[in-house]
Image (cartoon, rainbow, N blue to C red; front, side, top):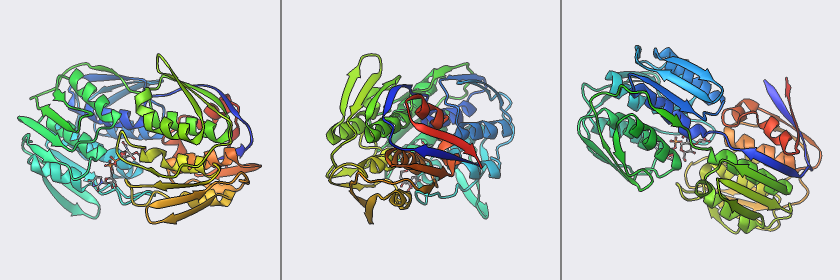
Amino acid sequence: MSNLIITGGSRLCGIIEVPGAKNSVLPVLAATLLNKGTSILENCPELDDVTTMLEILGALGCSIRRKGSRIEVDASKLAASSIPEELAKKMRSSIIILGSLLARCGEVLVSYPGGCEIGLRPIDMHLKALMQMGAQIDGISDGMLRCRAEKLTGCEILLDYPSVGATENIMLAASLAEGETIIQNAAKEPEIDDLQAFLRKMGVKVSGAGTGVIRIQGIHEIKTEPVHRIIPDRIVAGTYLAATAATGGSLVITGVEYDHVGSVLYCLKRCGCRIRNYSGNVIALESSGKLSALDLVRTSPYPGFPTDMQPQLVALLSKCKGTSVVVETVFENRFRYTEQLMKLGADISIQGRAAIIRGTDRLKAAQLEARDLRGGAALVIGALSAEGTSSISGVGYIDRGYERMEKVLSSIGADIKRVET
Ligand code: EPZ
């Protein structure tokens, strides 16, 4: 186990290049199971969740080659169709493999993914859609599901909610289904667009990503050698921008798509940051560190303010002058990390789905515990903004979504180090 030791007070200044997106590389890796050839992915982030996904693909019979941010997956010898339980439990988002594996093998044994710190994380929309396409799904023992489909048939599916994972699972299953699948009320996140781009490179006829209505014309077999570059990680970009806003300083972020972080930049500007957007995917932020509160921010599906930036924003608002309100509309329990922020002296009260934050400039160091990925990132921002030296345990959660966060933050002036406990 390791802890982060952070001494607050340093202004952050420098340049950061954004790595590939965790929430794109995971569904794209799931899509490689559809391919009887070798898929080559570039700009893949080096994260624990990616390692776990590769372990699952390996356990299913794929051969994997990984060199830095380049990953090759040869799924020609895909054998087993049961996802190892211990690996599936390690990473909730492994459920994203269900659609591909069912389409490729016709039968999948998968463990029901556990809930986590931010909510129950049900998969009812995933299962309902796959059953509409002809899958038979039985619960066989505690926590295990058996999914079978002689054949998957394209159909029209209306999602009750624009679920990212359900949209992705349906796109993957539909790629080898007979006929056309139409997804109504589909998620519009940039990661959906990236998955569409990869499926097209494998010869699947798919269109509509980003519009809310996605059409997939299934094909009989995929045997090709696609090469695909994963899009930049908009949440990693937003996290370091929020950290710089909180500490004061100036940060240049390269390799990021401006529109992917548009709603985050809007909030940072309204707090008082100066944002400049240069051509070639370069964004510059300047902050005095003395910022103003935001009366109301509500998280919502893309292009709204992303739920994955909600904890980081609340950490920033904890030191913005005035009272802010943040409403979490996507997950039912995504404020647990605020108990830890309050150890720093943050003044936050939770009322149902709303966090009321009264800004203070007197945050003081404390011993903190990360219990989920983005909540952990919020604690780092809080500690960077606090007087004194804080420690944060549970760094494994942070490593799931941020490549060597302590190295990146040190490179722009933070006083932070990782110590093994
Ligand atoms: C993806 O999770 C992301 N994970 C999450 O990022 C992100 O917060 C979320 O989308 C929303 O943007 C990956 O892409 C790996 P959803 P996902 O299905 O697909 C409910 C991070 O920090 N729901 O859009 O699981 C669900 O409970 C992670 O990187 C159902 O009720 O999210 C939630 O309340 C955290 N039934 C809402 O929908 C279902 O069948 C949105 O979930 C599916 C979802």
